[in-house]
Length: 77
Image (cartoon, rainbow, N blue to C red; front, side, top):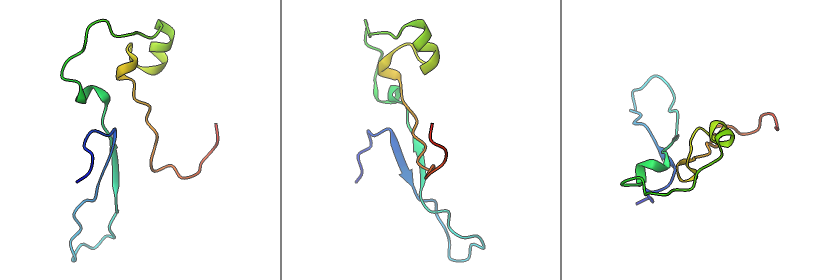
């Protein structure tokens, strides 16, 4: 059994033996941190307004950086 409280999860779609297309293999998806909090605790630290706009959330506890698992090389930033 895998750890269910990780932000990156995987699954393998069903592929029948008579499917005409090749299997696409393992798929990845990301789950946001707020799914694992039962409620929003009071007095959470907050980002500055400018940083909150850049990150898409006011609270660091809800920030989730998305790292694309399909990206293998690509351009360096």
